[in-house]
Every structure is written in structure tokens, then in C-alpha cells.
Amino acid sequence: MKLSVIVPVYNTAGEGKLEYCLNSLVNQTLKDMEIIAVDDCSTDDSWEILMRFEREHPGRVRAVHSEINRKQGGAKNIGLSLAQGEWIGFIDSDDWITPDMYERMLARAQETGADMVGCDYCLTDEHSMRVGQVVHNNRPEQTGRLNREKYASLILDSGSLVVKIYRRGIILGCESRFPEGIFYEDNALGNTWMLRAKHFEYIPEPMYYYYQHEASTVHTITKKRCEDRMQAGRIMLEEARKYGYFAEYERELEYSFTVLFYVNTLFSYMFGVKKKEPAFVEAMGREMRETFPHFQENPWYQERFNEEEKKLVRMQQKSTAQFMCYFTLLWTWRNVRKRLAKK
Image 1 (cartoon, rainbow, N blue to C red):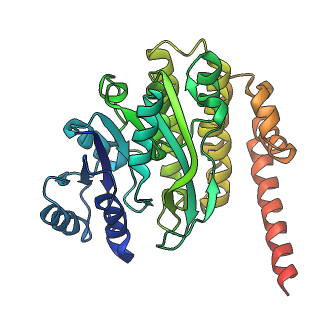
Image 2 (image 1 turned 30 degrees about the vertical axis):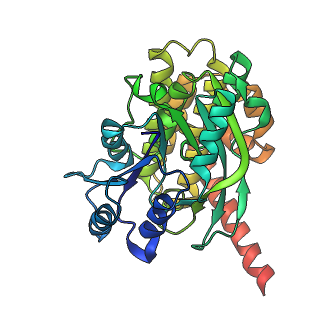
């Protein structure tokens, strides 16, 4: 078996999302592949759809049911335990891909000797093959035989897990598995797998369609999901220490942790959670400075965050009460200006 594609599934039957995803997989030009679709205890018709696809595509689709909800990480771990392919790929069950994506990725690997291959994705809000806003996941200078400079660059800008395929040994030859029970599981151990690769290749084309809808993880902001992001950040550092690459890439990991654990989580929480708890914001800021006391001096932090973002971070680090008051006033004023501009 050339390729195993793992599809974690939870309540994506509606609007034809799951069927559109699975059809894009069973119609791949690459035939030597298995599709392992793991139902994570869905409460809609997802499991019935998976069983139908298994009946209609015997030997190509394998439907697996989890008796308990383990979140995407748990569903992916079940898939990994069953995978037979020489290569491993992942796709979210509400997304889809071009018909030749996996064939082209494997061809690039065969041509170059790569053991990890990636591409771009596009954002879309419709079920079609029309290319939406393209998101470039990597850069040409990150490709080829990997050295310290390229590993460092990939830690800073790794790109999404779902737009990559990995030679089997990179993942299954490593004891780490996805954390279960949380979202953002990819962020937790993506670096560990990536640093096991020796040669990375990248096809700068959007062959993956990232479906944008209200139920998407990125559009659903709760305190629990913010806590999940923070936990994923902690695990990311635990992985680096466990496998001995923390010291060599400490500055890159410092920046990644700052983004994942703190800055993006902080702003997401303030924008998206209705009942805001000062104690939660205070604890987040305190853990950030305890983990990396000088994170605001990080060169990528200085370069990549704008002055207003850095001002807000400085304010939160100094006084949570002042930060929350200022942020609320700023956000209210901007909303008023938007409404006035529409009149």
C-alpha cells in the first residue's frame, strides 16, 4: 500500500460536507491508497455515510467507529494504529482536495528522494473546485536536504499538517502520538515529526481546499478552546525537551510558543469569549513570562507583530485590568465607527 489517508470525522454530515470530502478521496488519480475514516462518536449521520462509502468502495475505504469522543487527536491516533501505507496523510472531514494531489506529491517524492512533501491550500466557503484565497504554507528556500537553518525556518513557518504527506517511518517510527481530548493537536507535536524528516519538498499550488463555515475550529472561540491552545503550546515545549531539540532551537520555539500559547490565544479570547474572566487572562500572561521571561525581545516577535499588538501585550503584562478595559473600549469604538461608516 502506497499511501494511508486518515480522516477524523465528527458531525460533518450536514450540507454534504463529509460526502464532498470523501468523494474527493475516492476519486483520486492515485489508486494505490487506503482511506481510513474514523468516526469520533458523531451524533449525526456521519457514521452511516462512512459505512455506505465502505460498502461502495471495498478495499479502498475503511470506516472505523470510536465508542467515545476523543477529539481529532484521538481519532487520528486510531487511524495511525491501522495505517498500512508507505506514506501517511491527513485530511479534515469538511475539507477536500484536487483529484491529483496525492499522485503529484508522491511523484515529487520519488523524483527528489524527499520523505516529507507539502503544498498550499486555499480558503473557500462553497463546495466547488474554484480556487479561493490562496494561503502559501511554505517557501522554496525551506526545501531540499534539511539542515539547521531549514529546520529553524520550518519551526517558525511549518505550514499545516493536512497539506503534507510523510514517509511512514517519520510518524510511526516515533513514539509520540497526538494529544487526545483537545483541539490544536497538530501544533503540539508537528515539530517533532518535522525534525525527523531529512528532505522536504514543496509544490507551491493550492491543492487542498480549506472549507470556512461557522462550525470550523477557527471560527468557534470558547474558553475551553483557548485552554486547548495553551495546552498544545505546553506539549510543544515538552516534545522539544523530550527529544532533545529545545536548546538548539530555543529562540524559534520561544516565538512559536508566544504565538500559539499567548498572543493569538489572548486576542482570540478577548474577541470571541463573551464572559471574560480577568483571572484567566492574568494566569495566561503570568505563565507566558514565567516560561520565557524575555519573549518580547525575540527578533521574530519584534518583526512580525505590529506596534499596536505589541502595545497591548506590554499593557497586559503590566496590568490585566488596564489591558481589559482598554481593549474593550478600543473594540467598542471601532465597531461604532464601522456602523457609522455604513450609514
